Image 1: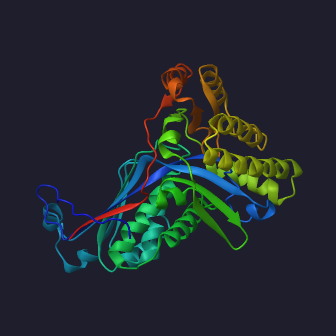
Image 2 (image 1 turned 180 degrees about the vertical axis):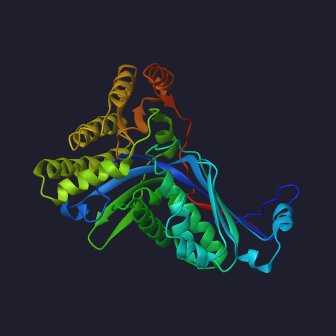
Image 3 (image 1 turned 120 degrees about the horizontal axis):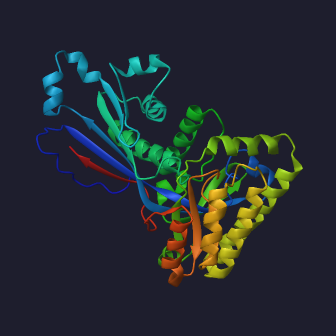
Amino acid sequence: MRSLAEFTPREGEQVKLRIEARAPTRIDLAGGTLDIWPLYLFHEGAVTVNAAITRYATCVIETGDSERAAQRRTTKRNNRRIALVSRDTRRREAFASLQALDRAGHYRLPLLAQLVRFFRPRTGLVLTTNSEAPAGAGIGGSSAMAVAICAALDRLTGAGLGLEEWIHISRDAEAIVIHVPTGTQDHYPAAFGGANAIELAPGSERRKALRVDLDQLERRLVLCYTGKPRQSGINNWEVFKAHINGDRRVWRNLERIAMVARGVRAALERGRWGEVGRLVREEWEFRKRNLPTISTPVIDRIIAAARRTGALGGKACGAGGGGCLALVIEPDARARVEAAVRSAGGEPLPMRIDRQGVRVRVNA
């Protein structure tokens, strides 16, 4: 388990137990989509390269009675009540018990509900989530949220599972919710932090921490939001289907992306930043060829404006179609690049590299 520390209850509350888990989102630099099983089995040496960033997904679990809850409670049965709350999407729902949640079948907050069903807490609770990722950002917000929820529920239930187990539970819960296959590249930075190479091999994937100067990497990345949410499930699913159905064009593009991702990994570890930028540009060109909806006029305009002012390369985060862009820059070009992003209709998002991954704090 990651670090545990005491929390101070909010004023006016008498909390029996409060658990907070926080997990970082990520920027992916190369090799995305290949992490979806079984696509990587068809591209030997497939790897995804990404880095955890300081835009967080947070889960808070509270059990016991706040003063307000105590005023509402009229029967002992209410101790079994499960309430799910999403602050960033402003949705909530409640169930009289875990069994009632099981029977519901349809949920306003399906990811939260599925993970509660997996961990099966023996007590009532209020589970509240919040995300610092913009809607549809493509930076792994839902995956980071799932990892944070797993960490909090594991601590509550005493399940004693490890980080890799949380990663796979999160992946499967997301697939249940969106009804298409999902990968694991988003979950590793959420769990471990830092800069990562996710090696995708028969039998299992493996995470290797990149031997890269994280301070240098931090200074050479710009994250910006296009203002339009992306639909990664749709784009990735279309690419997935085309590949499985034998589309040779998509196969060749992903084969090239796999080769480029290996190059990005090597260039990062050697500190060859110009090569990193060139390879990120190359990865994006091959990625766009998979589907016409992967890029948009706004994405093209922002990347072109950034390139004119000193960006070495840029690409959409995640599956594309909107959301966030990652730009590789020379450190002294940051102000110019961010100004160009704004003038082209984007919004630079402050961030740093997260070094720790998911963290849990408990007040008992």
